[in-house]
Length: 308
Image (cartoon, rainbow, N blue to C red; front, side, top):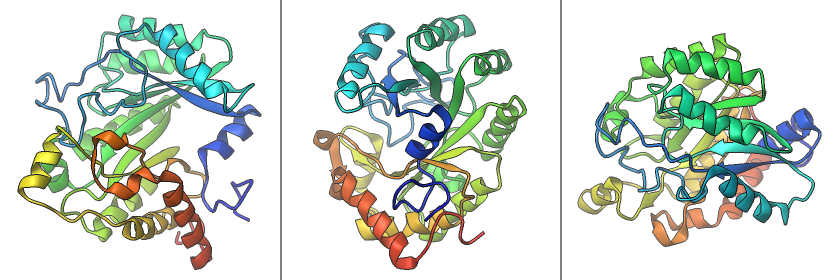
């Protein structure tokens, strides 16, 4: 059995990590802090990344029209039906969640960490959106709660990055990871498989690159083409190859083999809203994808980190 597993998983799951760290079931409560993004408002770019929805990739976050405590309690109440007696991590998910003055960040974050049974915060952001003042505050916050900063990278390849309108460089990303780790702040990196015109080798190279960095976790997504996005328009005008489920499973298993076993796999597939999804349709069957990854790792007699 794989070292970091209670069951048949051959990779380091987030559930395993949380149960070992907190001796309890832990689930994330997704929140919408009402932030925007420097890639939307013109600070570094306009319109956001081409795959990003109007909700800023926060489809499953709370309702931004409600205050954070109400959002938290609504999501928590729903999740508790499945997992009673759990602990919680507040997850600031939608848009860029460090893109505001520090006093505003402090007000929002600390409202959540002061709630009962909240053991940590996950904050999704961009590498170009953490000021030095914010970095100092995050270091202070990390001493109060279990803090994880989730950085969107998506790909290491500059040509793809320009195509998807990321509007920051790999060097910027590297500097941000280094600054966070100097302060002992946990880093989880988001990547996307199936970006337009990327090959299997390019996707694996992204993971090989990240494996050399001091990161604590990774989120692996499949590209979702959602209605009313720039990506949907690109796909309509210049169709590109969409990975099949079998191709995605094959690539993910290869990527796992090149990741250090202590890196926590925070996510290994996506779950877009069915009503917004144009392609790929197989993504809506999340558990089928997860099961197929497990089966392929067994078929290969493989596990996370085997190729290192």
